[in-house]
Length: 462
Image 1 (cartoon, rainbow, N blue to C red):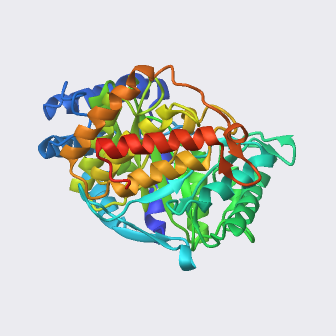
Image 2 (image 1 turned 180 degrees about the vertical axis):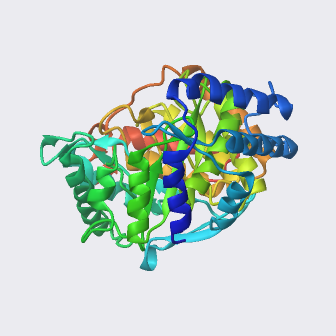
């Protein structure tokens, strides 16, 4: 879907002419007060049900959608650089949703993959985008990417990200970042060539802490390709934008490409508890598709207590958000699953099993991940947990929410006590043969054991 110039200019103009609001007031008054009022209006206060982490109440999901829609209309999106609010009418937001594609493709040739709006318990296979932009060292970048795209369950490529460029420290917003955008494209191309996955669709650009990574790597000779790839527009919390994001939007327009709009909301943050975070995620998603003309993406909850979303409250909120979007729009919604345990641990796979299953039955079109060890450590990402998460995601397409809820309640007790103190695990070179791209015997054994456990719990990986 080519970006519409009139809608783009409308956003830019309103970023300079909308109502003034200071970020502190936005965070401490506008967001919490508006969300609290919407929760009360739609009788959503204290509806979180941790005993049933996979929501099965359609009416509840619909009321959350209406609350989110109200908040999106009332609040809008704050541009941090101008401290002005980009406001949209209800009709404009609905038009933004209607204009979004219900189906689109990324990639080219044999690697082309179809993203399609999915209903609840939909048997159509979801799309697995891997990995997240976890930092890796330059010497391991190609082996990590090659190992990940060798996994047939991986449909598209996003991360990882670079910390250095030709040995020099990569500094956000500096000329180093501009160079890094192209370097990541070069390294990706070499890795996918080695893996035999030429043409795989990519999310641009993993190494782009500001807009310079996109300007340096997307739509230029030898870089990311507008006709094959999609540009990441990650917007600040809660419901904000910035010149950095808008630069990426304009570059996408100039190159004739399409956009991914993403954000998150913190349980325990300005939006409040899991109910408030769910409303914020829905509102933000509607604004992302309106302001950025997104083809893919969404906003998703994290729990500040452990900086992940694989616990009961976060899983409940995650399911409600994607069920609300699935039932009330035709968008191709994408989530991120934020695991907290590291490679070569059972906990990482348990977190992945519960979260990917919930997203599959709750109507997510696609998911990007994994965020192994919460993305906190350099080189802590491997192909094996990427394979496991993708296998679960696709195997659970068509499963009932009732069955998924039962399985989640079997698996959550295996790890939930360790949320907030998750095991760090081992880095890629510590649990993989970097030359052969094979897991160590220990990591393979853990994978095999957990796979057997989740099969017995009811996930059809066999």
